Every structure is written in C-alpha cells, then in structure tokens.
Image 1 (cartoon, rainbow, N blue to C red):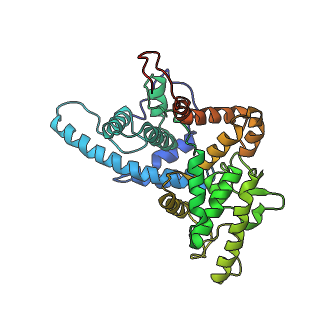
Image 2: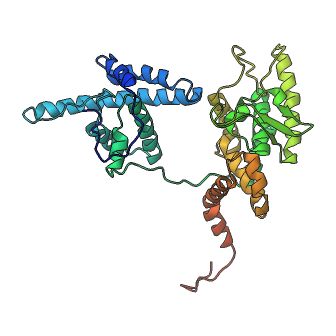
Image 3: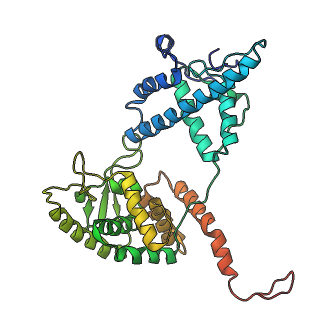
Amino acid sequence: MRGEAKPHAKRRRRLSCKQSAEVEALRLGRYPFAAAIRHYEERRLGIVGEATIKEELKTLRHLNKVFESLKEEADLKDSERSKENIRPFTTDPRNMGRREVQTFMAWMRKRGLDPVTQVKYLKHLKNFLKVFRNHIIDDMTADGVRFPKTPKKPIRTLDLEDLRTIFQAIDKMPGWHGSMARGMISLYFATGVRPSELRLALLKDLDLKKQTLMIRHPKGEGSWASQAEVDLIRPDMVPIIERYLQERRQHVDEAGLQEAPALFPNLFYQEGDGFYSANAFKKIKKEVEELSGVEFKLKDFRPTLTSITVNGNMSLLPALSAQLRHADLATTQRSYYAMQQGVAGRQLRESWGGLHRCPCTKARY
C-alpha cells in the first residue's frame, strides 16, 4: 500500500522507473524512518540552503521519535484486536498512509500544539514522504481532508516609549556585549534588515560615508535572492553606529587580533569564520531585555521601522518596499496592514483616553 493513492487525485510528477527502483531497493532496517533521514539529506543537498537543511533534519529527528512512540502504542492496541484485519502501523516512509498521518494529526491536537507548529511538522513530513514516492498527504488533500492552517498573527512593533527605554539601557551597557548591543540595535533600526543579514555582515560591508550596508547573505541566498545594498535611513542612528565602530576597534586590539573581518566579530572564539551564532546574538538581546525591562525580538525592529516611517505618510510605502527588498509593493502593503492590526487595539484605547460620555449608560469616565 503505497500512500493509498486515489484515482481522482490531482496529477503530479512521479519518480522515474529508475528512481522508483532505487527507492524500493533501500534497506532501511528496523527503524526505517530514522534510516531514511540520511537519504533525504542527500536528496536535498544543493536544492535548499544549509540553514534550511539543518532545520529540516532537526524536525525530522524529532518526528522520528514521535512516530516510533505512536507505533508502540498502535502495536499494543493491534495486539488486543488480533482477530481483526488491521494493517500494521509503519514508520517506513515508503509505506506510511492515512492511518499514520491521521494518528499523527490526532497526537498533535491532543498535545495542544500551536497551529503554526502543526503546519510546520506536516510540511516537513510531506516533503520527507515525497522523496520516497509517497504522496499520501497530497492525496488526502485532494480527497477533501482539512489540514491545519497557519493563522494570521499580528506583526509585533515596538512603541516609541519602549524604543526610548531600550536605547537608554544600551547607552550605559558595559563591556563588549554593551558595544555589540549598541551596534546591533542601531543598525537594525537604521536599515530594517533581517537578524541573520546583519549577523553575517562584514566590516567592509558598512560604508558610513555613503551611509549604506551591503547585504552579503540575504534571505533566499542561492535560490531567489542576491546581494543588495540598503541605506541607513535613520540619520539619528549614525552617531551610535560610529560609537560602536570606535569601541569595536578597541576591543579587537585588546583581544590581540590582527584581523577581524566580521562586522560583529566573535572575539572569544576565532576558529572558523569568526561570526557569532544566532543564539549568541539572542543572548545579548536577552541582556538588553533584562536591563531595559522591555521584551522584544531582533526581528521586531524591521516592522517597527516600517510602521514609524510610513505612518502619516503613505507615499513613502514604495520607497520603503525597495528598502526592505520585498518582491513587490503588495507584499509591503500586506505586511504594513498586519503591523497596524498589531497596534490597532492600543491606538483605539488611546483614542478613548480622554474624558468621554458613554452613550449607553450616560456615565462619564
């Protein structure tokens, strides 16, 4: 039973006979899901980015544990119904069908997983199964099965008071982490770049004379995006950036390094490329949160810059769309609308902040 394909399922590209034979010939052993992950990794190499492969493999290893646990439970129940003609629960990606997918979906609901997580797990599972000539999730979709959908969540933006508090906190933050925090946050807010795009920037990518930053590793690198230059659109951030560069030079000298090509060099671990990891950036952000009392994400500065720039002057939207390197203006418009949803409640409460008379109760508040 190969994915229980239905005759009315929509047509799709299937593997060639040679590819099918290769899939059938695979020896996956006692734990086929786990053994198949290596084959999947080989098939994805060069098709998606390194970070994407890393995320997929991490998720698949977790799903392997989940499916092995579900198989144990299913085998126990099947043994109690030995007289019934029940297809055994399998973790072989070539043979998994409706039973396995529906059992997994029930497990996610029972665990109360966020719909976003459910969508992510099913997406990775679908890609994994398709490598092994199994299109069961597509077939179930064609049959009308309703899978979880990602809900539209408001995009977070920081209000002006929170921004002031954050910049006041980093102004007095000591040490190298303090210097990094000043450089990171001022550049994120001045450019609207994504967290990884700044983390992987080189010192030579920043040109304060031209007030530009070269994005060497954009989102979608090697697939649909190429290097691009963005402007520092907030001049008020330039003095903070200049201060960071001066402090950076001092810290690099004190560390005894002759070369530190990264814009934010890891002064304590110079093997390899010398860049900080994403988790290291988050740890510095956490220190800022503790000092300021404001919780935020590094990616929040991108929509915050958008909201502050466009509010009151929608004519700036096309220019900002180019700055953010969106595929088209419609993408920026949708993003901006989502941002406004995120602050709509606060804006409405503020509009009622004065003394008003309630038309229902005639009460004053």
